[in-house]
Image (cartoon, rainbow, N blue to C red; front, side, top):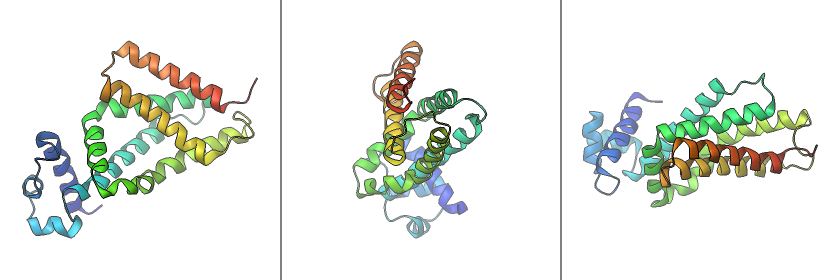
Length: 192
């Protein structure tokens, strides 16, 4: 990524978190990035147009963590547990950024870019599911693509409930993870 664009994105994250989306001005972002205002407009058309780039950074962070922490030598159920742990941990660590991105994307025309932003995540999870299906862990009639999107949505929604909306305790977070894993086991796995 271009160094100036990266500076703008990171400055936008800081300023949005400090001032909120509504009160942030492009001039605040460029000041934080240490660039001229005209340079901002070479990369983005408005303050809200930075939101998809921030979302991309978060998806990249998620993918880095998945690749680092999901152990491919483990059984599928343990790998799935690691996936859930990564999503919960990232959501907890970056909860204010996620809340900001959701608010910014929902209040703009950039929401339709979500599918494109998530494509690497969908592809990674799709390959993960295909391996499990090839090993006859998952149901024969399971459609990979829609299942991937549903599972990602389920895990993220549960993590958001814990860390963004309800602010649940550590014990409640563990229970929510277990509920998600149990639900997915019933939905995805072959009947034994």
